[in-house]
Length: 187
Image (cartoon, rainbow, N blue to C red; front, side, top):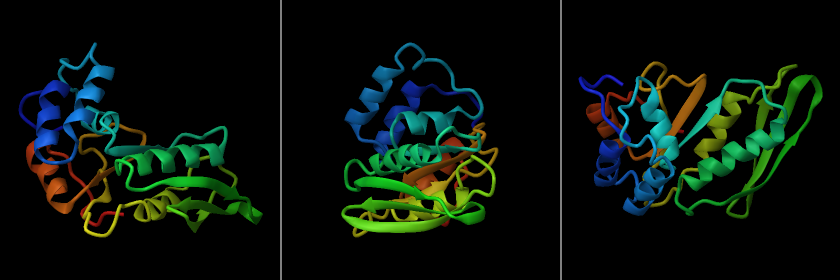
């Protein structure tokens, strides 16, 4: 985080509510879950953790996983939950292909969606596949929120990527107020 003084989760919560990023009830619930350290100053990189804790961001780690399909399911369900129930995901399936050329499929609000997911011999999530899927999990319609990738070194210390579901104006406000740099394209 690039702000001049360290802030706490307790101080971040009302700003996220005022910006319309988090509902007041969700902020209170999240603070309740982390009550033991809610008043501790945030260290560099912790703002993205706060956004995940508050249910408006999803982290996609670069670590190898035991079960690719289950890990994709967890990421996609968590991303859908960021919409506050406007998007529902189910029936996540990783269809294995030859030479690591797999296909990730899931159902979004009754529509079957599929994306290529290249794994080679690795057991890490395909970031391009996740990014493409997140583009299909934005609420759409009148809701301008899309997933924006937190740029490396900008408020995150995650070994992977973090995506925040916000409008373009909210993305700009996160940058202005908290020094969080987001990819302006959105997913």
